[in-house]
Length: 405
Image (cartoon, rainbow, N blue to C red; front, side, top):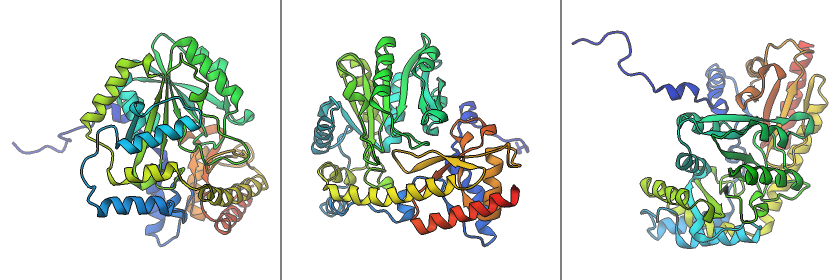
């Protein structure tokens, strides 16, 4: 029987709701490069693209593991000394956990996927920040669960309103997702806000996923782990990784730590079943975890000196451009900029981003890719390039804006 012109196979319906603007927009940039133009990518938080590298101790530990033949499977939940090192570090930062409550994963992304897969049935609800990291939306859509968005307020340092969060909760709500330091805004939550989020979880018996993969990358203020405020009656999953804090995103080593596992014994067992089913995280980089947990302070201090200078030039130059503004983030390496769509003739945030790419070969990500309203004009900037590169980018942006005023 001959094939017809109609497709033989069609994708599952759940994929229609699966979007990842951070990478999807790159296809537009590739088109510019095909025309011989050079694009400056400020769309993705990959430190390696901009000259950062993992600490030498972590590299040496991984190379030594490879040379010594540690190329097989690890235990499903991770190597013994690695989970012990993670637990010891977590305890030192006030996160109650233990080695048997640690699972090492294929990056922080798998940690989030594994937790949600173990917890959610179709129709169950997850409270997620908006704007927020698109991974969570994608996982929820894949599981046929439902995302409940709680807004982050740009006029209040991109902090959420606890009262609004509580109004969204229904009998089907199972999980509260918190990202701190936040991606995409770069903001850091103060202790009083964290305490209120914990109280909401306590009152409504929610599991909290707290994504803290940037917890070492903070500027003037100290990061407070959410689990440190959980006491003994709130179940918390703290997600962490080597990717951002240790500048090793391509190693794909993440983990999560359970706080108060006695509240979720069946779910904990489900985590282990899922971990067993996918075998294990990459073996050789697990040998770097112990070195990472004992890493000298001067590595992070050196990274933060560079990021601090890049953040400051970003905030100063963006806010100096008429029609453009941005926040002053307290963590990570992102700012949320805003183009005044009442003042400038762009139809939406994405229209602004694509015109800037077309005319100046500068790639940001439109805020609506993270969940903001397209008419608000938000865009995310990754300030990982060196200061001289950033100065040129923002100078070109200023010229671009002038021609539209």
